[in-house]
Length: 615
Image (cartoon, rainbow, N blue to C red; front, side, top):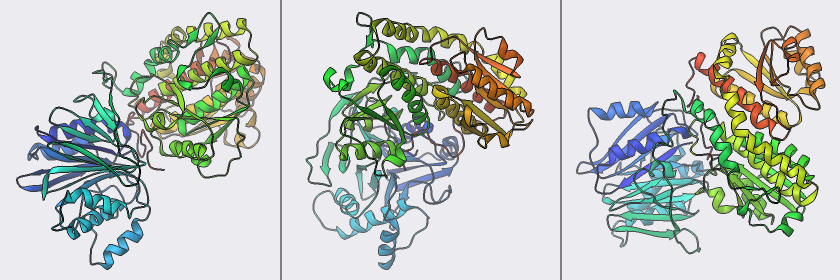
Protein backbone atom coordinates (compact mmCIF):
# COMPACT_ATOMS: atom_id res chain seq x y z
CA UNK A 1 0.00 0.00 0.00
CA UNK A 2 1.74 3.13 -1.31
CA UNK A 3 5.40 3.02 -2.21
CA UNK A 4 8.30 5.46 -1.84
CA UNK A 5 11.57 5.49 -3.76
CA UNK A 6 14.06 8.36 -3.47
CA UNK A 7 17.60 8.73 -4.83
CA UNK A 8 20.61 11.00 -4.34
CA UNK A 9 23.87 10.17 -6.09
CA UNK A 10 25.91 10.51 -9.25
CA UNK A 11 23.52 8.78 -11.66
CA UNK A 12 20.39 9.96 -13.42
CA UNK A 13 17.60 9.59 -10.88
CA UNK A 14 14.61 9.00 -13.17
CA UNK A 15 15.50 5.48 -14.44
CA UNK A 16 16.36 4.30 -10.92
CA UNK A 17 13.15 5.74 -9.48
CA UNK A 18 10.96 4.16 -12.14
CA UNK A 19 12.68 0.81 -11.69
CA UNK A 20 12.11 1.00 -7.95
CA UNK A 21 8.44 1.90 -8.42
CA UNK A 22 7.96 -1.14 -10.64
CA UNK A 23 9.38 -3.33 -7.88
CA UNK A 24 6.82 -1.87 -5.50
CA UNK A 25 3.83 -2.42 -7.79
CA UNK A 26 2.81 -5.47 -5.77
CA UNK A 27 1.91 -3.19 -2.85
CA UNK A 28 -1.08 -1.81 -4.77
CA UNK A 29 -1.61 1.72 -6.08
CA UNK A 30 -3.88 3.88 -8.23
CA UNK A 31 -1.51 6.69 -9.29
CA UNK A 32 2.19 7.48 -9.42
CA UNK A 33 4.50 10.45 -9.66
CA UNK A 34 8.09 11.60 -9.72
CA UNK A 35 9.92 14.83 -8.82
CA UNK A 36 13.51 15.69 -9.74
CA UNK A 37 15.65 18.67 -8.81
CA UNK A 38 18.07 19.90 -11.47
CA UNK A 39 19.33 23.13 -13.00
CA UNK A 40 15.76 24.07 -13.88
CA UNK A 41 14.58 23.73 -10.30
CA UNK A 42 11.91 21.28 -9.17
CA UNK A 43 10.13 19.34 -11.92
CA UNK A 44 7.17 17.01 -11.27
CA UNK A 45 5.21 14.56 -13.43
CA UNK A 46 2.19 12.63 -12.09
CA UNK A 47 -0.30 10.22 -13.66
CA UNK A 48 -3.36 8.25 -12.59
CA UNK A 49 -3.17 4.55 -13.43
CA UNK A 50 -0.29 2.19 -14.00
CA UNK A 51 3.36 3.19 -13.77
CA UNK A 52 3.62 2.51 -17.50
CA UNK A 53 1.46 5.58 -18.04
CA UNK A 54 3.93 7.65 -16.04
CA UNK A 55 6.78 6.20 -18.09
CA UNK A 56 4.96 7.07 -21.32
CA UNK A 57 4.57 10.67 -20.14
CA UNK A 58 8.27 10.87 -19.36
CA UNK A 59 9.42 9.17 -22.57
CA UNK A 60 9.19 12.30 -24.70
CA UNK A 61 10.43 14.70 -22.06
CA UNK A 62 12.53 12.94 -19.40
CA UNK A 63 13.42 14.60 -16.12
CA UNK A 64 17.19 14.97 -15.82
CA UNK A 65 18.87 15.23 -12.44
CA UNK A 66 20.62 13.17 -9.79
CA UNK A 67 18.24 13.92 -6.90
CA UNK A 68 14.65 12.75 -7.03
CA UNK A 69 11.70 11.28 -5.19
CA UNK A 70 8.86 9.10 -6.45
CA UNK A 71 5.68 7.49 -5.17
CA UNK A 72 2.86 5.09 -5.90
CA UNK A 73 -0.35 6.18 -4.20
CA UNK A 74 -3.23 4.10 -2.85
CA UNK A 75 -5.99 6.61 -2.19
CA UNK A 76 -6.94 7.36 1.41
CA UNK A 77 -7.76 11.09 1.61
CA UNK A 78 -9.10 12.16 -1.77
CA UNK A 79 -9.98 10.38 -4.99
CA UNK A 80 -7.38 8.94 -7.40
CA UNK A 81 -6.64 12.04 -9.52
CA UNK A 82 -3.54 13.70 -10.93
CA UNK A 83 -3.90 16.51 -8.42
CA UNK A 84 -4.10 14.13 -5.46
CA UNK A 85 -1.19 11.99 -6.66
CA UNK A 86 2.23 12.42 -5.01
CA UNK A 87 4.65 14.20 -4.89
CA UNK A 88 2.95 17.18 -3.27
CA UNK A 89 4.42 20.66 -3.00
CA UNK A 90 4.28 23.50 -0.51
CA UNK A 91 2.86 26.94 -1.25
CA UNK A 92 6.08 28.11 -2.94
CA UNK A 93 6.24 25.12 -5.27
CA UNK A 94 9.90 24.68 -4.35
CA UNK A 95 9.46 21.92 -1.75
CA UNK A 96 8.13 18.46 -2.60
CA UNK A 97 7.36 15.48 -0.42
CA UNK A 98 6.20 11.89 -0.83
CA UNK A 99 4.38 10.35 2.09
CA UNK A 100 2.95 7.03 3.25
CA UNK A 101 0.61 6.96 6.22
CA UNK A 102 -2.24 9.04 7.59
CA UNK A 103 -2.00 12.49 9.20
CA UNK A 104 -4.86 12.17 11.69
CA UNK A 105 -4.94 15.85 12.69
CA UNK A 106 -4.64 17.19 9.15
CA UNK A 107 -8.00 18.97 9.49
CA UNK A 108 -6.80 21.06 12.43
CA UNK A 109 -3.45 21.72 10.72
CA UNK A 110 -5.20 22.75 7.52
CA UNK A 111 -7.37 25.25 9.39
CA UNK A 112 -4.33 26.66 11.17
CA UNK A 113 -2.52 27.15 7.87
CA UNK A 114 -5.62 28.53 6.15
CA UNK A 115 -5.91 31.13 8.93
CA UNK A 116 -2.38 32.21 7.99
CA UNK A 117 -3.47 32.72 4.39
CA UNK A 118 -2.42 29.42 2.82
CA UNK A 119 -4.63 27.79 0.18
CA UNK A 120 -4.83 24.16 -0.92
CA UNK A 121 -5.23 22.53 -4.31
CA UNK A 122 -5.99 18.94 -3.30
CA UNK A 123 -8.08 16.83 -0.93
CA UNK A 124 -5.08 15.09 0.64
CA UNK A 125 -3.58 15.11 4.10
CA UNK A 126 -0.14 14.95 2.45
CA UNK A 127 -0.50 18.39 0.84
CA UNK A 128 -1.27 19.79 4.30
CA UNK A 129 1.97 18.22 5.56
CA UNK A 130 3.92 19.67 2.61
CA UNK A 131 2.54 23.15 3.22
CA UNK A 132 3.30 22.82 6.95
CA UNK A 133 6.92 21.88 6.25
CA UNK A 134 7.15 24.73 3.76
CA UNK A 135 5.79 27.14 6.36
CA UNK A 136 8.49 26.11 8.82
CA UNK A 137 11.15 26.26 6.10
CA UNK A 138 10.20 29.86 5.31
CA UNK A 139 10.25 30.89 8.98
CA UNK A 140 13.85 29.60 9.22
CA UNK A 141 15.15 32.03 6.59
CA UNK A 142 18.61 33.09 7.73
CA UNK A 143 18.92 30.32 10.31
CA UNK A 144 22.10 28.28 10.52
CA UNK A 145 22.29 24.53 10.07
CA UNK A 146 20.34 22.34 7.68
CA UNK A 147 17.20 24.31 7.05
CA UNK A 148 15.20 21.50 5.40
CA UNK A 149 16.03 19.06 8.17
CA UNK A 150 14.91 21.49 10.86
CA UNK A 151 11.71 22.38 8.95
CA UNK A 152 10.77 18.71 8.66
CA UNK A 153 11.43 18.09 12.34
CA UNK A 154 9.54 21.20 13.45
CA UNK A 155 6.55 20.25 11.30
CA UNK A 156 6.47 16.64 12.47
CA UNK A 157 6.36 17.72 16.09
CA UNK A 158 2.91 19.13 15.28
CA UNK A 159 1.69 15.97 13.56
CA UNK A 160 -0.50 13.24 14.99
CA UNK A 161 -0.57 10.10 12.87
CA UNK A 162 1.73 7.89 10.86
CA UNK A 163 4.27 8.70 8.22
CA UNK A 164 7.12 7.48 6.13
CA UNK A 165 8.18 10.50 4.13
CA UNK A 166 10.95 12.06 2.06
CA UNK A 167 11.30 15.80 1.43
CA UNK A 168 13.42 17.78 -1.04
CA UNK A 169 13.71 21.53 -1.72
CA UNK A 170 15.14 23.28 -4.75
CA UNK A 171 16.95 25.79 -2.50
CA UNK A 172 18.96 22.84 -1.12
CA UNK A 173 19.53 20.83 -4.33
CA UNK A 174 21.93 18.34 -2.76
CA UNK A 175 19.82 17.31 0.26
CA UNK A 176 16.94 14.95 0.98
CA UNK A 177 15.35 14.32 4.38
CA UNK A 178 13.48 11.17 5.37
CA UNK A 179 11.42 10.45 8.48
CA UNK A 180 9.45 7.54 9.84
CA UNK A 181 6.71 6.91 12.34
CA UNK A 182 4.59 3.79 11.95
CA UNK A 183 5.21 3.45 8.21
CA UNK A 184 8.41 1.69 7.09
CA UNK A 185 11.32 3.55 5.55
CA UNK A 186 14.66 1.99 4.70
CA UNK A 187 17.96 3.69 3.86
CA UNK A 188 19.99 2.06 1.10
CA UNK A 189 23.71 2.86 1.18
CA UNK A 190 25.66 2.52 -2.05
CA UNK A 191 28.94 3.86 -3.42
CA UNK A 192 28.53 7.63 -3.63
CA UNK A 193 24.76 7.16 -3.74
CA UNK A 194 21.87 6.75 -1.31
CA UNK A 195 18.29 5.50 -1.54
CA UNK A 196 15.25 5.89 0.67
CA UNK A 197 12.39 3.46 0.09
CA UNK A 198 9.38 1.96 1.80
CA UNK A 199 10.57 -1.55 0.96
CA UNK A 200 14.00 -3.16 0.56
CA UNK A 201 12.91 -4.71 -2.75
CA UNK A 202 12.95 -1.28 -4.38
CA UNK A 203 16.68 -0.83 -3.83
CA UNK A 204 18.04 -4.36 -3.48
CA UNK A 205 19.23 -4.53 -7.09
CA UNK A 206 21.61 -1.60 -6.45
CA UNK A 207 22.80 -2.05 -2.89
CA UNK A 208 22.67 -4.78 -0.28
CA UNK A 209 23.69 -2.43 2.54
CA UNK A 210 20.62 -1.08 4.24
CA UNK A 211 19.39 0.39 7.50
CA UNK A 212 15.79 0.46 8.70
CA UNK A 213 14.68 3.69 10.32
CA UNK A 214 12.98 3.38 13.68
CA UNK A 215 9.93 5.34 14.73
CA UNK A 216 10.70 9.07 15.13
CA UNK A 217 14.03 8.78 13.26
CA UNK A 218 14.91 11.59 10.86
CA UNK A 219 17.71 10.96 8.36
CA UNK A 220 19.34 13.75 6.38
CA UNK A 221 21.34 12.81 3.28
CA UNK A 222 23.69 14.94 1.23
CA UNK A 223 26.48 14.15 -1.20
CA UNK A 224 28.95 13.64 1.64
CA UNK A 225 26.93 11.07 3.58
CA UNK A 226 24.04 10.92 6.00
CA UNK A 227 23.20 11.92 9.53
CA UNK A 228 20.49 10.73 11.92
CA UNK A 229 18.43 12.51 14.54
CA UNK A 230 15.38 11.61 16.61
CA UNK A 231 12.20 13.54 17.31
CA UNK A 232 12.20 12.11 20.82
CA UNK A 233 14.76 11.98 23.60
CA UNK A 234 15.79 8.52 22.46
CA UNK A 235 19.31 8.26 21.16
CA UNK A 236 19.33 7.94 17.38
CA UNK A 237 21.32 5.15 15.81
CA UNK A 238 21.03 3.06 12.67
CA UNK A 239 21.70 -0.66 12.58
CA UNK A 240 23.40 -1.37 9.25
CA UNK A 241 22.69 -4.80 7.78
CA UNK A 242 23.34 -6.77 4.62
CA UNK A 243 20.40 -8.16 2.69
CA UNK A 244 20.42 -11.33 0.61
CA UNK A 245 19.18 -10.39 -2.85
CA UNK A 246 18.79 -13.03 -5.53
CA UNK A 247 18.30 -11.65 -9.02
CA UNK A 248 15.17 -13.08 -10.60
CA UNK A 249 13.42 -14.04 -7.38
CA UNK A 250 10.74 -11.46 -8.11
CA UNK A 251 10.55 -12.02 -11.88
CA UNK A 252 7.93 -13.96 -13.79
CA UNK A 253 10.06 -16.38 -15.74
CA UNK A 254 7.84 -18.58 -17.92
CA UNK A 255 4.65 -17.90 -15.97
CA UNK A 256 1.95 -15.51 -17.24
CA UNK A 257 1.22 -14.15 -13.74
CA UNK A 258 2.98 -13.99 -10.39
CA UNK A 259 0.01 -15.63 -8.71
CA UNK A 260 0.36 -18.78 -10.80
CA UNK A 261 4.13 -18.74 -10.31
CA UNK A 262 3.69 -18.51 -6.56
CA UNK A 263 1.07 -21.26 -6.49
CA UNK A 264 3.54 -23.55 -8.24
CA UNK A 265 6.36 -22.44 -5.92
CA UNK A 266 4.56 -23.99 -2.95
CA UNK A 267 6.37 -27.27 -3.50
CA UNK A 268 9.57 -25.43 -2.59
CA UNK A 269 8.19 -22.85 -0.12
CA UNK A 270 6.64 -25.53 2.10
CA UNK A 271 9.89 -27.47 1.94
CA UNK A 272 11.78 -24.30 2.94
CA UNK A 273 9.47 -23.81 5.93
CA UNK A 274 10.38 -27.31 7.15
CA UNK A 275 14.05 -27.46 6.14
CA UNK A 276 16.41 -27.76 9.11
CA UNK A 277 13.54 -27.74 11.60
CA UNK A 278 12.96 -31.46 12.11
CA UNK A 279 14.72 -33.42 14.83
CA UNK A 280 14.53 -37.06 13.74
CA UNK A 281 16.35 -38.36 16.81
CA UNK A 282 13.80 -36.94 19.23
CA UNK A 283 10.87 -36.98 16.78
CA UNK A 284 10.11 -33.32 17.30
CA UNK A 285 10.75 -29.97 15.68
CA UNK A 286 13.46 -27.43 16.48
CA UNK A 287 12.60 -23.74 16.23
CA UNK A 288 15.66 -21.84 17.34
CA UNK A 289 14.26 -18.34 16.83
CA UNK A 290 11.60 -18.58 19.53
CA UNK A 291 13.99 -17.32 22.22
CA UNK A 292 12.16 -19.49 24.75
CA UNK A 293 13.77 -22.30 26.71
CA UNK A 294 11.98 -25.66 27.21
CA UNK A 295 10.75 -24.66 30.66
CA UNK A 296 9.22 -21.43 29.33
CA UNK A 297 7.56 -23.34 26.50
CA UNK A 298 6.05 -25.83 28.95
CA UNK A 299 4.68 -22.99 31.07
CA UNK A 300 2.53 -21.60 28.23
CA UNK A 301 -1.11 -21.98 29.29
CA UNK A 302 -2.75 -20.26 26.34
CA UNK A 303 -1.90 -18.92 22.89
CA UNK A 304 -3.47 -15.95 21.12
CA UNK A 305 -2.97 -15.80 17.34
CA UNK A 306 -3.58 -12.45 15.67
CA UNK A 307 -3.35 -11.32 12.07
CA UNK A 308 -5.33 -9.98 9.11
CA UNK A 309 -6.73 -11.48 5.92
CA UNK A 310 -4.91 -14.59 4.75
CA UNK A 311 -2.71 -14.62 7.86
CA UNK A 312 -5.86 -14.64 9.99
CA UNK A 313 -7.23 -17.62 8.06
CA UNK A 314 -3.93 -19.47 8.50
CA UNK A 315 -4.21 -18.73 12.22
CA UNK A 316 -7.69 -20.23 12.30
CA UNK A 317 -6.26 -23.45 10.89
CA UNK A 318 -3.37 -23.16 13.33
CA UNK A 319 -5.80 -22.99 16.24
CA UNK A 320 -7.12 -26.47 15.46
CA UNK A 321 -3.64 -27.84 14.76
CA UNK A 322 -2.05 -26.63 18.01
CA UNK A 323 -5.01 -27.60 20.16
CA UNK A 324 -5.09 -31.05 18.52
CA UNK A 325 -1.37 -31.75 18.76
CA UNK A 326 -0.39 -29.89 21.95
CA UNK A 327 -3.64 -29.59 23.96
CA UNK A 328 -2.89 -25.90 24.53
CA UNK A 329 -5.97 -23.61 24.35
CA UNK A 330 -5.72 -21.25 21.39
CA UNK A 331 -7.76 -18.15 20.60
CA UNK A 332 -7.88 -16.22 17.33
CA UNK A 333 -8.44 -12.47 17.15
CA UNK A 334 -8.44 -10.05 14.25
CA UNK A 335 -5.47 -7.75 14.78
CA UNK A 336 -7.64 -4.72 14.02
CA UNK A 337 -9.97 -5.68 16.88
CA UNK A 338 -7.36 -6.83 19.38
CA UNK A 339 -5.41 -3.57 19.18
CA UNK A 340 -8.49 -1.57 20.20
CA UNK A 341 -10.38 -3.71 22.70
CA UNK A 342 -9.62 -4.63 26.27
CA UNK A 343 -8.87 -8.33 25.85
CA UNK A 344 -8.21 -10.06 29.19
CA UNK A 345 -5.11 -12.24 28.89
CA UNK A 346 -3.53 -14.16 31.75
CA UNK A 347 0.18 -13.84 32.32
CA UNK A 348 1.05 -17.19 30.74
CA UNK A 349 -0.51 -16.30 27.39
CA UNK A 350 1.82 -16.32 24.40
CA UNK A 351 0.84 -14.01 21.53
CA UNK A 352 1.63 -15.02 17.94
CA UNK A 353 1.52 -12.17 15.41
CA UNK A 354 1.27 -13.43 11.83
CA UNK A 355 2.07 -11.28 8.78
CA UNK A 356 3.69 -12.17 5.47
CA UNK A 357 5.19 -8.72 5.00
CA UNK A 358 5.78 -7.98 8.67
CA UNK A 359 4.53 -4.44 7.99
CA UNK A 360 0.75 -4.80 8.34
CA UNK A 361 -0.25 -1.81 10.44
CA UNK A 362 -3.06 -3.49 12.37
CA UNK A 363 -0.88 -6.49 13.20
CA UNK A 364 1.91 -4.21 14.40
CA UNK A 365 -0.66 -2.37 16.51
CA UNK A 366 -1.77 -5.66 18.05
CA UNK A 367 1.86 -6.59 18.72
CA UNK A 368 2.46 -3.30 20.53
CA UNK A 369 -0.76 -3.62 22.53
CA UNK A 370 0.29 -7.10 23.68
CA UNK A 371 3.71 -5.76 24.67
CA UNK A 372 2.04 -2.88 26.50
CA UNK A 373 0.23 -5.46 28.61
CA UNK A 374 3.44 -7.31 29.36
CA UNK A 375 3.00 -10.35 27.14
CA UNK A 376 5.68 -12.14 25.17
CA UNK A 377 5.02 -11.82 21.44
CA UNK A 378 6.44 -14.09 18.75
CA UNK A 379 6.17 -13.37 15.04
CA UNK A 380 5.57 -15.52 12.00
CA UNK A 381 6.61 -13.58 8.91
CA UNK A 382 8.40 -13.77 5.58
CA UNK A 383 10.46 -10.60 5.79
CA UNK A 384 13.57 -10.94 7.93
CA UNK A 385 14.12 -7.18 7.97
CA UNK A 386 10.50 -6.22 8.70
CA UNK A 387 9.18 -4.12 11.57
CA UNK A 388 7.40 -7.16 13.01
CA UNK A 389 10.64 -9.16 12.99
CA UNK A 390 12.45 -6.36 14.80
CA UNK A 391 9.77 -5.68 17.42
CA UNK A 392 8.77 -9.21 18.43
CA UNK A 393 10.58 -11.15 21.14
CA UNK A 394 11.37 -13.97 18.75
CA UNK A 395 9.67 -15.88 16.00
CA UNK A 396 9.73 -18.14 13.00
CA UNK A 397 10.63 -17.03 9.49
CA UNK A 398 8.72 -18.55 6.60
CA UNK A 399 11.53 -18.45 4.02
CA UNK A 400 8.89 -18.53 1.28
CA UNK A 401 10.74 -16.15 -1.03
CA UNK A 402 9.20 -13.02 -2.61
CA UNK A 403 5.41 -13.03 -2.86
CA UNK A 404 4.56 -10.39 -5.45
CA UNK A 405 0.94 -11.08 -6.34
CA UNK A 406 -1.54 -9.21 -4.15
CA UNK A 407 -3.45 -12.46 -3.60
CA UNK A 408 -1.45 -14.43 -1.04
CA UNK A 409 -0.96 -18.12 -1.79
CA UNK A 410 2.35 -19.62 -0.72
CA UNK A 411 2.40 -17.51 2.44
CA UNK A 412 -0.79 -19.25 3.61
CA UNK A 413 0.60 -22.76 3.17
CA UNK A 414 3.92 -21.76 4.73
CA UNK A 415 2.17 -20.27 7.76
CA UNK A 416 0.04 -23.39 8.26
CA UNK A 417 3.17 -25.55 7.91
CA UNK A 418 4.80 -23.50 10.67
CA UNK A 419 1.77 -24.05 12.90
CA UNK A 420 2.23 -27.81 12.42
CA UNK A 421 5.90 -27.45 13.44
CA UNK A 422 4.90 -25.43 16.50
CA UNK A 423 2.17 -27.92 17.41
CA UNK A 424 4.68 -30.76 17.10
CA UNK A 425 7.19 -28.97 19.34
CA UNK A 426 4.67 -28.16 22.06
CA UNK A 427 2.94 -31.52 21.70
CA UNK A 428 6.11 -33.53 22.22
CA UNK A 429 6.68 -31.55 25.43
CA UNK A 430 3.23 -32.55 26.66
CA UNK A 431 1.19 -35.43 25.27
CA UNK A 432 2.56 -36.72 21.98
CA UNK A 433 4.50 -39.96 21.98
CA UNK A 434 7.68 -40.45 19.98
CA UNK A 435 5.71 -42.61 17.55
CA UNK A 436 3.15 -39.86 17.03
CA UNK A 437 5.94 -37.34 16.57
CA UNK A 438 7.50 -39.53 13.91
CA UNK A 439 4.17 -39.76 12.07
CA UNK A 440 3.89 -35.96 11.98
CA UNK A 441 7.45 -35.65 10.66
CA UNK A 442 6.66 -38.19 7.94
CA UNK A 443 3.55 -36.21 6.99
CA UNK A 444 5.51 -32.96 6.78
CA UNK A 445 8.22 -34.53 4.63
CA UNK A 446 5.57 -35.95 2.27
CA UNK A 447 4.07 -32.52 1.53
CA UNK A 448 6.26 -31.38 -1.42
CA UNK A 449 5.47 -34.48 -3.49
CA UNK A 450 1.79 -34.26 -2.55
CA UNK A 451 1.64 -30.60 -3.60
CA UNK A 452 3.21 -31.54 -6.94
CA UNK A 453 0.43 -34.07 -7.49
CA UNK A 454 -2.22 -31.39 -6.99
CA UNK A 455 -0.47 -28.93 -9.31
CA UNK A 456 -0.70 -31.49 -12.12
CA UNK A 457 -4.48 -30.97 -12.03
CA UNK A 458 -4.20 -27.32 -13.07
CA UNK A 459 -5.57 -27.83 -16.59
CA UNK A 460 -8.47 -29.92 -15.28
CA UNK A 461 -9.29 -27.23 -12.73
CA UNK A 462 -9.22 -24.64 -15.49
CA UNK A 463 -11.78 -26.62 -17.47
CA UNK A 464 -14.06 -26.73 -14.44
CA UNK A 465 -13.60 -22.97 -13.91
CA UNK A 466 -14.73 -22.41 -17.50
CA UNK A 467 -17.94 -24.25 -16.65
CA UNK A 468 -18.75 -21.77 -13.83
CA UNK A 469 -17.58 -18.56 -15.51
CA UNK A 470 -21.06 -16.98 -15.36
CA UNK A 471 -21.53 -17.47 -11.63
CA UNK A 472 -22.29 -14.27 -9.72
CA UNK A 473 -21.87 -15.74 -6.25
CA UNK A 474 -20.18 -18.76 -4.65
CA UNK A 475 -20.36 -20.45 -1.26
CA UNK A 476 -17.39 -22.20 0.36
CA UNK A 477 -17.90 -24.73 3.15
CA UNK A 478 -15.42 -26.40 5.48
CA UNK A 479 -15.40 -27.85 8.94
CA UNK A 480 -12.89 -27.81 11.80
CA UNK A 481 -9.39 -27.41 10.28
CA UNK A 482 -10.95 -26.81 6.87
CA UNK A 483 -13.15 -23.90 7.95
CA UNK A 484 -10.18 -21.54 7.70
CA UNK A 485 -9.46 -23.03 4.26
CA UNK A 486 -13.06 -22.30 3.19
CA UNK A 487 -12.64 -18.68 4.25
CA UNK A 488 -9.34 -18.49 2.39
CA UNK A 489 -10.82 -20.03 -0.75
CA UNK A 490 -13.66 -17.49 -0.69
CA UNK A 491 -11.19 -14.67 -0.13
CA UNK A 492 -9.10 -15.71 -3.15
CA UNK A 493 -12.22 -15.88 -5.31
CA UNK A 494 -13.54 -12.46 -4.34
CA UNK A 495 -10.11 -10.78 -4.42
CA UNK A 496 -9.15 -11.58 -7.98
CA UNK A 497 -12.40 -12.41 -9.79
CA UNK A 498 -14.71 -9.86 -8.08
CA UNK A 499 -17.30 -12.66 -7.76
CA UNK A 500 -19.17 -12.47 -4.48
CA UNK A 501 -17.95 -15.36 -2.32
CA UNK A 502 -18.57 -16.40 1.28
CA UNK A 503 -16.92 -18.97 3.51
CA UNK A 504 -18.93 -20.76 6.21
CA UNK A 505 -18.63 -23.66 8.65
CA UNK A 506 -20.36 -26.57 6.94
CA UNK A 507 -22.71 -27.23 9.86
CA UNK A 508 -23.99 -23.63 9.72
CA UNK A 509 -25.70 -24.36 6.41
CA UNK A 510 -29.20 -24.57 7.87
CA UNK A 511 -28.69 -21.56 10.12
CA UNK A 512 -29.42 -19.07 7.36
CA UNK A 513 -26.86 -19.77 4.63
CA UNK A 514 -29.09 -22.28 2.84
CA UNK A 515 -31.35 -19.38 1.79
CA UNK A 516 -28.63 -18.39 -0.71
CA UNK A 517 -28.63 -21.76 -2.46
CA UNK A 518 -30.03 -21.93 -5.99
CA UNK A 519 -29.12 -23.47 -9.33
CA UNK A 520 -26.89 -20.51 -10.24
CA UNK A 521 -24.80 -20.47 -7.05
CA UNK A 522 -21.98 -23.03 -6.91
CA UNK A 523 -21.03 -24.42 -3.49
CA UNK A 524 -17.48 -25.59 -2.90
CA UNK A 525 -17.29 -28.30 -0.23
CA UNK A 526 -14.08 -29.31 1.54
CA UNK A 527 -14.79 -32.94 2.38
CA UNK A 528 -11.68 -35.09 2.63
CA UNK A 529 -11.95 -38.62 4.02
CA UNK A 530 -11.75 -37.90 7.73
CA UNK A 531 -13.80 -38.40 10.88
CA UNK A 532 -16.53 -36.00 9.77
CA UNK A 533 -16.78 -37.12 6.16
CA UNK A 534 -20.33 -38.47 6.54
CA UNK A 535 -21.51 -35.23 8.14
CA UNK A 536 -20.06 -33.24 5.25
CA UNK A 537 -21.75 -35.51 2.71
CA UNK A 538 -25.06 -34.99 4.49
CA UNK A 539 -24.73 -31.21 4.13
CA UNK A 540 -23.63 -31.58 0.54
CA UNK A 541 -26.78 -33.58 -0.22
CA UNK A 542 -28.90 -30.79 1.23
CA UNK A 543 -27.39 -28.42 -1.32
CA UNK A 544 -28.03 -30.88 -4.15
CA UNK A 545 -31.65 -31.35 -3.02
CA UNK A 546 -32.15 -27.64 -3.71
CA UNK A 547 -30.56 -27.87 -7.18
CA UNK A 548 -27.35 -26.15 -6.09
CA UNK A 549 -24.26 -27.14 -8.12
CA UNK A 550 -21.48 -28.58 -5.96
CA UNK A 551 -17.72 -28.76 -6.41
CA UNK A 552 -16.02 -31.03 -3.88
CA UNK A 553 -12.43 -31.12 -2.69
CA UNK A 554 -12.00 -34.79 -1.87
CA UNK A 555 -9.36 -37.39 -1.07
CA UNK A 556 -7.83 -39.38 -3.91
CA UNK A 557 -9.58 -42.70 -4.34
CA UNK A 558 -12.91 -41.44 -3.06
CA UNK A 559 -15.27 -42.69 -5.78
CA UNK A 560 -18.40 -42.20 -3.69
CA UNK A 561 -18.05 -38.43 -4.00
CA UNK A 562 -18.47 -38.71 -7.77
CA UNK A 563 -22.09 -39.71 -7.18
CA UNK A 564 -22.70 -36.69 -4.97
CA UNK A 565 -20.85 -33.70 -6.46
CA UNK A 566 -21.03 -32.20 -9.94
CA UNK A 567 -17.25 -31.74 -10.08
CA UNK A 568 -14.34 -32.90 -7.93
CA UNK A 569 -10.86 -31.57 -7.15
CA UNK A 570 -8.75 -34.35 -5.70
CA UNK A 571 -6.04 -34.06 -3.06
CA UNK A 572 -3.68 -36.78 -1.76
CA UNK A 573 -4.59 -38.62 1.42
CA UNK A 574 -3.05 -36.87 4.42
CA UNK A 575 -3.57 -36.67 8.19
CA UNK A 576 -5.89 -33.94 9.44
CA UNK A 577 -3.08 -31.59 10.50
CA UNK A 578 -1.43 -31.38 7.05
CA UNK A 579 -4.59 -31.80 4.95
CA UNK A 580 -5.39 -28.03 5.00
CA UNK A 581 -2.02 -27.32 3.37
CA UNK A 582 -3.16 -29.49 0.47
CA UNK A 583 -6.88 -28.73 0.26
CA UNK A 584 -6.34 -24.99 -0.24
CA UNK A 585 -4.24 -25.40 -3.40
CA UNK A 586 -7.11 -26.50 -5.70
CA UNK A 587 -9.06 -23.47 -4.45
CA UNK A 588 -6.13 -21.19 -5.31
CA UNK A 589 -5.95 -22.64 -8.82
CA UNK A 590 -9.74 -22.43 -9.21
CA UNK A 591 -9.76 -18.72 -8.34
CA UNK A 592 -6.75 -18.04 -10.54
CA UNK A 593 -8.19 -19.73 -13.63
CA UNK A 594 -11.57 -18.12 -13.06
CA UNK A 595 -9.92 -14.67 -12.93
CA UNK A 596 -7.98 -15.30 -16.14
CA UNK A 597 -11.12 -16.52 -17.92
CA UNK A 598 -12.93 -13.35 -16.82
CA UNK A 599 -10.08 -11.12 -17.98
CA UNK A 600 -9.21 -9.74 -14.54
CA UNK A 601 -5.91 -8.11 -13.58
CA UNK A 602 -4.82 -11.14 -11.58
CA UNK A 603 -1.73 -9.80 -9.81
CA UNK A 604 -3.09 -6.30 -9.18
CA UNK A 605 -6.82 -6.57 -8.43
CA UNK A 606 -8.78 -3.37 -8.06
CA UNK A 607 -8.81 -1.47 -4.76
CA UNK A 608 -6.38 -3.90 -3.09
CA UNK A 609 -2.86 -3.55 -1.73
CA UNK A 610 -0.36 -6.27 -0.90
CA UNK A 611 0.80 -4.77 2.35
CA UNK A 612 -1.81 -2.80 4.29
CA UNK A 613 0.33 -0.22 6.06
CA UNK A 614 -2.54 2.20 6.71
CA UNK A 615 -5.23 0.98 9.16
